[in-house]
Image (cartoon, rainbow, N blue to C red; front, top):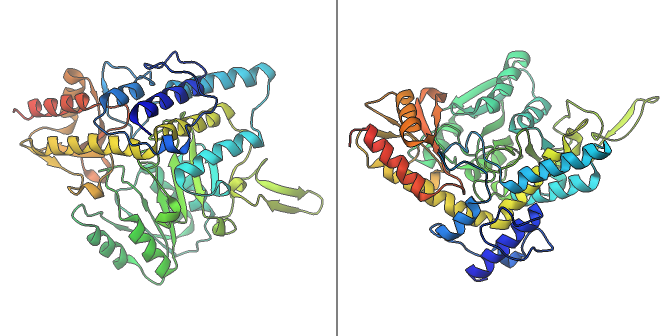
Length: 434
């Protein structure tokens, strides 16, 4: 498909998603379907195609007064998501119905399965990545002195659940410091920790600290060879780049809906490999968890899919909004999203690396980096640098105190521009006295 046709298709799909073209910078007839056909999604858009990416940028209410570089903390939602949530809330409140229907949930999980590379039956809708992590951590049948291998660069939402099981159940956590020098070194560090007591490898797909993409496929092979469960915290990967949990080979994968997926706040996804549904015990259960029960006999059957981990009344407008957000990304095409993200973050890395007194904390190898770059300055405290960039250059960055890095993290997503990146580089140069 030619670029012009693809741009028209994108504009039509956006218009169909929101129900009008009022937020589009390119007019075209609304489409009767929400996602362009497969040939549209496969069309290649260059990272440098500013006309196209400016159309995408116009789909967000995100202010132009500052450059937003904190998607790793919280993603901005496009108009289509915001309007979907508002519309569905009005609709459901108008009839006083929750809106949680089998049809609606199936549609959301179909989109999630496309994003994750899984079967819809293996997807659970959660409130955030942290809830998904707790479902797996608390549900695995671990015993006292069983060992879990993780890293020193985990997010608080990814590690507290394991620390709680260590505190209350006596499991043993073993850590390795991620090496930014080579993938092989990480595999060696992890392998050295494995003993006869090891049961789980639980790490981040992409670290929240330095944006490092760990060698997740190679680690999956180690886990299979050793008979270990393999759990990935994907909060910093899903929505940033193409993803396929089957190809990775992990058993469990948790992610947020409100970061790179651009969904409403308090949404998330959890993948549990179908063969392990009966292994991960559902701790919190209620309506929707079961496949039938008899109070008199005490018999209960849990749902045959990952729905067994869902319970109680959901905020349906938020979940439907998450479905719209995933559809938004699929309309653009995840290959195109990643092409843009990678180009922006590469320019961030290369531009900052050239500045005197800047110490790069993210890996130098592009294949080991996501779309987050972390650095610090040798001649200025990070708090002062962050304030300087915010006040003078109107840049929203994120302080990284985890693992005692004391750095500044720059996240670049599809709504960022090269102009904003150059403003960042200029600001850091001024702070460095260049």
